[in-house]
Length: 432
Length: 164
Image 1: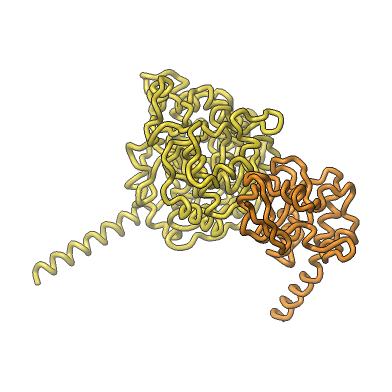
Image 2: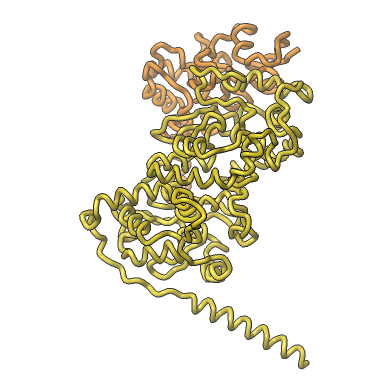
């Protein structure tokens, strides 16, 4: 009896402590302001903010494709359900038009809305918390001078409507601290480190996450996933067959295509489309910092070693495996553009597939998705192009093709269970 | 030996399994409706139906077309007896030079089989991959509207009845 009473007391105390913690994590409402006129902001400051917002890739999540910029409502699939992004246009009713800068800063650094509501960590405030005052100031000027669009965003469903849980997540994973420059490195490296870890929130996709959806500590940029795609490792474990350097990364980030790595695809495509509008020095800094993360393995590999996580060397030139179905499909469907010496006039952006990162990843999802969806420049963009093949091939045919490509051009061993993986990817696409 | 089922008929062909379906249709079977435009899947002039979906026949090796139901523009009707979609294209005079039209009709056919009463935005989105260099896009969309008008009316009528 006594033991039971002690246990009950402990449970009651824990519940009380948790309740008290959640209660104590409440944030006050910040009084709304009259939406400030455009003239209230300095033109140069707005321009700086625009270039920064391009690095933040704000538009991608906060805009429904084809609809008004920053008006929110885009459905973002997470392992916990679908999240609808907020309206961050300066609309007074449904956007942030009545937010003073103090409220904007609090949202960026602590993930709390003007009304004191906890935002969900799908909004990467765990990265933005490191932003400098000056950069937040410029971003505020940019956001507050966009076109205001009143747009009600659908409510999130359980469990994503249980915002009282967010303070617990914050206590575990949010480290509110400004960026600390590393004196061992130069200014450009440090600028890159700052942008990658704060505004660029590269780790949001390129770092693996734990069961509670937080980025795993000690695994920064070690490879994660986004919207059904894998986000390849950006550190020494990079699966890219041609080692990256600062110059090739700069070209890739800025143009969405680079001769020895190919085109940005999936969720990376809008990132590069936005970076066109960023400050060139900032994109260079990001490229310098990321290249430094892979420098040691890149040097080894330029000396002839294979990528750290690949199971063998490329088999290019070796005879085809299997029943010849994959080879025949490649010859009829792919070789026109992806021959060893692509015809620059007809297929300017098609790479020799031995350079394809997707074929060198242990996970076949990016290769599957690229063939199913193709590559299409965004609206008003020019760029690399590949047709979609989703209706052209059955799962068995696509499996034969991809395993042929994997063995001929990729990292050696065929992907096990590929056909099932293809079915899974197709089903996921249908549900989205 | 490659076996193709085109417009309901089975054909046995002695050809390289990597041959694009388009070449087999035109050169082996004499079905000249589908056209060679770019050969890269960029223009849609070669579009045919494979298992009821629109596919670029210039990029589909015959080995991958085996055992699947292929339908070309010839399968929808003839000059003397055009099918309903073909008749709508004639009624709207949707062709100028006509080179893209067989592909346009086949992509529209895939849409109609999936969605018999498409909205105009759905037609525009579905037809996006196919190019017309003469610029008769408005007439092409109108022809598809015409071909689907009856189905749209039926759908609207049943909606009105259900909701009073």
